[in-house]
Length: 418
Image (cartoon, rainbow, N blue to C red; front, side, top):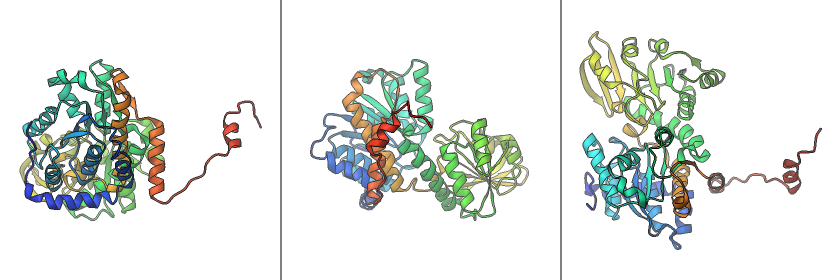
């Protein structure tokens, strides 16, 4: 097995500084590291991970190793790897295969390298590792205790595999944990998408019309941040309940066809392809900016944009300008990939503290229970969800009420009326 492959090992010291900084903002994960570093409950486990190589991910990787696991890692997005962090992990003897601006072939080569470790557990973001394992390395499946999936798009696809009978080992839907999607997706995505947008474009958000494609947890977070920065927010949806909720939250709701001529910024977070396509782009005003916060680069149809254009050029970091054949200028953030990571640093460490504590606990739970599970998608255990939330509150100096014994009895007393 190749030891590692990263862009530049001379960046390792800078990467270590970033990891040390992240650790100071991830107290729950660091508590778990301290708790399990002596007993090493993950000893004997080999974890193949495919998740954005950021300073926060490095804290997770090193916590898994402190608990006894052997870890091999690749990035889950060609544009999201921080080369400094990747070098720091390699310098710490982590078999990491990731660098910024991977080609598609290089991306899957990196995943293949992690599977040479013959994993007993998988940890995924977007399910590309899960797909690769099923499609090309099914001989490894009998060794697996289980895996976890980090993001909405990946969970949707793994559930589709399970429904078709194609899933061959158990997967925990970490994304569906309350301490993940209610915080990472809402507050993390809400803030980091606009961080990426501003780094790439330097626009003033106040006074702009921002169109949010999709009103799931990520879309809600983005809409809230856009409104707070002074934007006029429009939401597009296919789900009537979410569309109604967006309207009740104070946003205009309409079809993308109707939003296209009035939007200044278009941000998608649906997990579905072709949310913004040629017919929408033809209606957009000159200067419109498009970006995507969904996992794959298919929500804004970049081939359609190219077909409408006579020239494309990079004008700022992570911002491409397309001069259309009719003389307009349209802009695409981060090549249509995750704007918060392609153009920024991703979520703040303090919110990833929750998500990655869930990932750590999922690995622990699967180590104990995975071999007895049928191939299916499993919920993150509720008791671990509550425990993670309580630990986070404690690190924030917050205490909460508890039921009295009388209240506990009352909650179960079905014969008490008015």
